[in-house]
Each structure stands twice: as C-alpha cells, then as structure tokens.
Image (tube, rainbow, N blue to C red; front, side, top):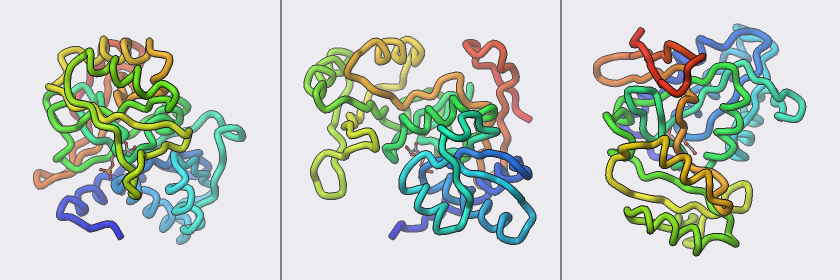
Length: 246
Ligand SMILES: O=C(CO)[C@H](O)[C@H](O)COP(=O)(O)O
C-alpha cells in the first residue's frame, strides 16, 4: 500500500487542475506515478457523474491500465488512436524551462512515446519537484538492453557520476515493460542536458533516458504558495525552451 504524504494534497490539486483541460470526446494519455494517478481518479469521477463524455485513455504502463480498468475508464491503444489530444503525467524534477527528468516509476520509454504522440503535454507535480538545474534533485534513469548492460554501464561511468542498477521489489534487477534494465545515474547538476541527451541517444544499447527536453507544454505545480501554471510560450522553436508564467 502506498504511504500518503503531506505533499499528496498538492499532487491532487495539480492533477485536478490538469483534468479541467480534458473535454468530451478527447483521447488522453494517462501517466504513471502517484501524481498522475490523481488525474486518472478525477477523470473517472467526472466520467461516472456524466460531466465528461466519450473520453478514451491511453495508459503509459500496465499498472495505470489496471487502475483505469478498475475505475471503468474506457481505454484505447496507440495502434487504434495514434494521435492523442493531451497527456497528463508526473515528473521527478522540473527546471524553469519546463524540461524534466522522469522515470523513477520505470515507465520512461512509454511515457515519452505517449508524450510524443500527444498534441498537448501537461506535467503535474508538487512544488518539491522544481529545481534551478536538472540533476539537483533526481538521478537520471537510463533504460538499457540487458545484452548491453556492462558496456553501457562503462560508457556512463566514463562520463562521471555514480551508477546503480535499479533493483526490483524482489531484490533482482528491475525489468521494464520492454524487458530492459534501468541504470540510475546520479551526477552533479547538468550543465548541458541537450548534449548529454545526444550522447545517450547515440548509444545502441541505451533504449531510453529520463530527460524530457522541449517536450512539455504546461507544468502545473501545487505547493504551500498555491497553484502555479507554467507554460511554454513557443512550440514552433522548441530548441529555445522559452516559457512564461501564466
Ligand atoms: O516518470 C514517472 C514514472 O516513470 C513519474 O511520472 C515520476 O516518477 C513522478 O512520480 P510521482 O508522481 O509518483 O512522484
């Protein structure tokens, strides 16, 4: 059973504000994690009481799929609905340019696929996830093909930092939905996340990494200071990552 912490109130507030962006007939990506779970719960309530109609969910993980089924949210696959109206997901760390680290829950590859299939990508979080520079708070999950585990570990070690093979609940290595392992890479705050992303993406044995750069359109953060909506101003020039506080 998940322990409910003081930040859960804020997670719920942020998630519920995001669900206000869902309207009838939409196809919505359902993110993985405790914050996104509040959005799934809220959508289920609105569908049940008739405030929302004809919404389809595309889950980012088996766990979210099970939860959505339990809550009677109608589901679709990317095969059937490859273009989503929006996705609501959580994050482990968010910088002022709306770039994120994700993947603590292990669903990073599917989360990125669903985000890339979505017209609007919304991150919901409590204020503890915000930082000035990625890497200050979260380690970076790197999903690695088991065949390539040792060489990719050596590659990451050559870049510095500390690397840990993520254990699963049974103490054996955690295995992703794709059958891969995750290396959690702790390092000093990242000076150049884009260059790092390019290096990681050049490696054949690295299937995914938790850097979500120039992907997110809106971040909804809740904390003791209230709710904040951060918006990316220009989607047409993603490399600049500019944003405005609304
Ligand atoms: O990236 C994720 C899962 O792969 C989650 O969105 C991230 O870990 C945030 O989770 P939580 O809302 O439980 O803090």
